[in-house]
Length: 370
Image 1 (cartoon, rainbow, N blue to C red):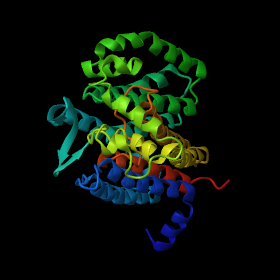
Image 2: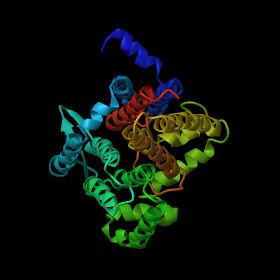
Image 3: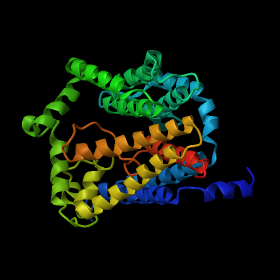
Image 4: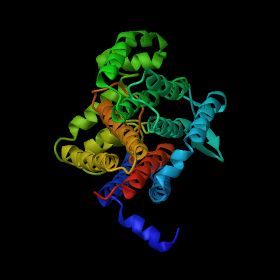
């Protein structure tokens, strides 16, 4: 790609979204550092150093994805989907077991989470299928094929077990079907059927997953076990008040009530809310609103139906992670273990979020000028 074309593409970026993503990464580095802080006389956990590296790589992934034509990756949807399924099968047999779950593969000394790649591949395959000219959104076969695309990765991810990541595929699929033109009546009937069979899922849950649900409805069910993180998170968020206690002054974190195993990852919002209060939390949510609005803007102005569906699916993925993560930290949803995009500690989802945001920009760059 020549320099003039590259500059022309970069000038068409949605700068508001780009700045928001970069600021969220910076916030993530700062509060991953804070999550590893235990006082002036204690060593700081080195999570933030790795987070800086992952943010730097994520920024490069973002730029490359934005500049590359999204239609080229769409043409490879079948192969990428097959690769995603293969990785999910591999992790079940050869994955690293942590706390009873097999979710990671060792790749050249680095742990990678195939479910993150598989979610993107599933969105890609579904968007590609629904954008085909001969596909009739009103035909029952369209729903059947969509279910066949979403079903295998859903069950493979749930088998790891990682129910939170698996459940992310449901609202994403629903959003794509709505944008593709599937009648609301049909989707309503599907939702009703799913609600009726939902109680059966209780028997398919593992013991720890049942405990999380019981704790959600009754935090006192196991306050020193399954309910500990949720209770301490609620205390941290509530004690932050309007302005917060100050950076590195969050007592729930510094004193270790929020364990280091979860403070930098699933419960990073609790650290932010305690130290920066309602004002800081609202500012962070404002940045996410800019990113989500940018995704919707890209979908609305997409050059083709595939771009519209691709941007919609990726935006729904980011929104679902933000909504679910924050809802679980303040007690509005059961603990699911979904990270906060661009902020939570971890390399696999940082790459996923950066790639998703970059692909959204790729759609926006190539939009119709209207």
